[in-house]
Each structure stands twice: as C-alpha cells, then as structure tokens.
Image 1 (cartoon, rainbow, N blue to C red):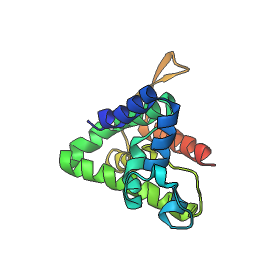
Image 2: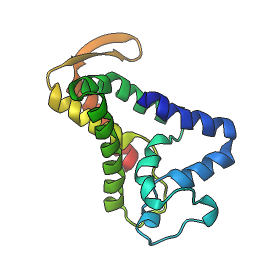
Image 3: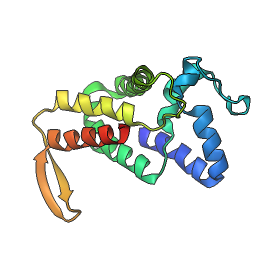
Length: 169
C-alpha cells in the first residue's frame, strides 16, 4: 500500500507536466526556511499548512530512479519490519520516520530554501528497524546486474546509507 501511495503522486505529477511538478514540490515539499519562518513561500504555492509538509514531502520524488530506489528498499526490507510490528504500528512507524527525516533536515539546514522531497527519511527508519530486528539475515543481490550473490543484509543497507550520505553532501 505504501508503495502505491508513493507512486501515485509521482505518476500524477509526471502526467501533469513540469510546471505542475514544480508547483507540487514547492507546495508540498518540506522547505526548512519556510517552516522555520525565515522565508516565505509565494502565496500561489501555499496549498497546505506548513507543518503538514513534515509528512507530505515524503510522498514526492524527483524522478523514476529516486522513486524506484526508495520503493525497492521499502519492498525488500519493509515487509519484514511490517510483519514484526503489525500493519497499524508499521504505518505509524513509517510516517513518524518520515516526519523525523524532515525534522533532522531542518536541524541541519534550517535556513535552506531548497525543497526536500522523497521517502528517504522513512526508508532510513525502516532500514534501521530491519537492522535491529534481523541483524544476521542474508539477502540475494545481483552483482553487476548479472551475478546472484547472497550477502549479509547489513552490507546492502550500509551501501544504501552511504548512497544517502553522498546524495546529501
């Protein structure tokens, strides 16, 4: 369900065109300087209360690779965490992780005027929960897109974390 809820806004904004996508990113993305009242958003783009952007940002994605990468990790690791927590607690956990992602972005760069979008904050929480709940599990990967390897999940997750840090920097 979360994968569908993440994919629908991407599909809608892609179909609607670049102008609509840009408006959606400004209106629904998390912009620290706007939320912290050091900058104002053009009134044309105000579609929700600023505080809701702590959550809405996580359902927008920049491109198909951004969406696909996040949803791949959600699909592979999220179902196990959901099984451990139960459906409702998992949903609450996922949403709280999304909020925490925006909150920490606001702490790191409170004056940033760049909109934050994507489910990476929520996925980071799911990845962390997976590592805590299943520290010794091995997963299958395709090395070089051809060679199947079974490696410890923490290696895959460490690579995801490294990728997130590289994108952040």
